[in-house]
Image (cartoon, rainbow, N blue to C red; front, side, top):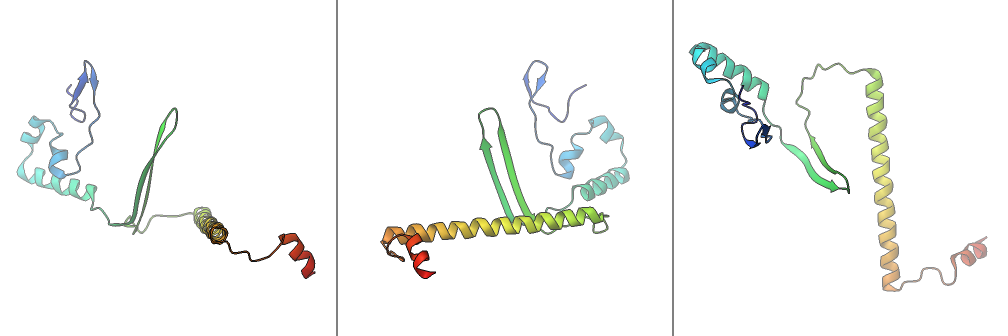
Length: 148
């Protein structure tokens, strides 16, 4: 049988992967032509309606960050999407999942805060050193001992 999802042959017996179409007509084109001809106009219209519902509408994203990390033996693709959750609202969520998500979110916020704070402090110190400003003459240990 002819492989309709991966129609491009690279070599004998091997198919090059091709992305599945994301339109109703593109998905219907994957059906066998004789099956499509056997559908009545009402059936075809209903199939189009159901496929359109299954595809859904893409939501706009606030953040869409994509990057690759090439290692010696493999390559990783990272994608971060932030946007409105348009999935079903009545999805059940266990208490443990909610607590785990909350802990992960708080941990990420704290980690991000620490990283940004340390970066600002290091940048300010390097800027101070580059300009030649000396806030405490002598060694800092001597200043602490004199304060006590």
